[in-house]
Amino acid sequence: MTRFLAHAAAASIGVALLATLLVGFPIAPAQADDPEFCWKDTYGRGVGTIPDACGPGREKIGLLCYSKCPAGTARFGFDCHSVCPAGMRDDGLFCRKAEYGRGAGYPWVPADGFSDAGMFRRCEADHGRNNCEKHGLIVYPKCAPGYEPFGCCICRPKVPDCPALGLNPGIDLSCAKKVYIGDPVPMVCSGGKEKDAGLCYPKCDPGFDGVGPVCWGKAPDQWVNCGMGAAVDGDTCRDVIIDQVMAVGELAWWVGSLGVGNPGKFATGSAKYQELKKKFDNLVDNFEELRRKYPEIEEAIENAQMANDIKGILEDISQMRGVTRSEDMIRLAAEIMSLFDSTGISSTIAAYTYPVCSDYGFGVGRASLYQHGNYQGYEVSLPVGRYTLDELRARGVVNDDISSVRVTPGFRLTVYEHGNFTGWSKIFDSDASWIGNRENDQVSAVVVEAR
Image (cartoon, rainbow, N blue to C red; front, side):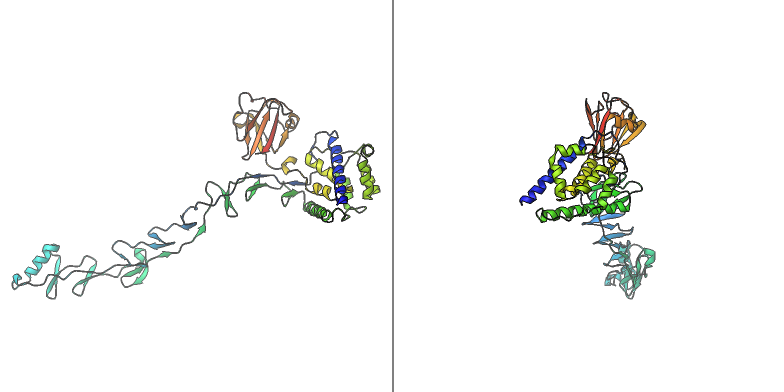
């Protein structure tokens, strides 16, 4: 365990010293040359909600959506059944043009004398003149139009034309109802939201794809998707992933062996050395001075038993130029430190420390600055980042010349009076067609960040 702690302490000291040296160099503002990998920009879009609406032409029953019943039908459970036309009896799955009885009729009584007149007189008194007829020995009311006598006492309709009534063919006086079986589908999202993995989320901004509660920026043009990141090509993507997997594996090896194990990945002439040479045009003019000032570095080199190889690489790298991003600085420092850090800590830092794509100027802007009010005049779109006056000028913004702004939902724009983020400041979480009387034509620095 003592050896484990000693290695860890030496590695931590070495990384800190080398990182301090690298960051302390005077570096001219410039964008990292030839970026090859970046993490995709992301922002959260809130907690997903359960779908609660049905699409056009559908209605909600329970937790599902069913097609609305066609005209002439009605809901019966989850299905739609024909509504029986007027004059037809509803017999469940059938509609019947039903018979009806015309009563016991008006039989002869002694008071009628020896003629039928008395029977007709009593029948017409109840049903109207000429609305009665005799069947056998009894007078009955005539059947209604469309009906014919069936026997003495029944009025039976003609067999209906079922298709003409919008029904299916049936049996005798019954027509089969049309039945539309329910077609349940899950509910959809309301309010313009989109469905992902069964939940509803606000749609992502243009240039972003939603995966659950996170909106992920798309890979820059001509680049390839590389998991949560993007790479300039497939080979680079493969190399970065291998570095990340191997770095974690090496760290686990070292921890599991209490600092004794070492996979020995830095063989003489390895591709790692060549990669480092390409990544650095310059590194340390004063490496010898650093070694004299911090004996721990010299001791680390000797303990690594690679002094000649490391010395050769560091002599080839005289200075570091053209890198201003903190992620790049940390990664480069960690990569150098990994040469004499057997713990794997440095290489793990190096493998994962990359900037997001918008920091390289890729992707859609998260805020836009406009020369005039109401979003008129020139427009400059900015990704996430901090922009001094010089950086704004490099992007085409004139000092003290901004009057309106737009801000992508989920992001924040802070404007400053002076070019070094001093003086008054004002925060915008949404679009502003007029930034204010005090702020108008007075902006000299801005910060764009996720909320």
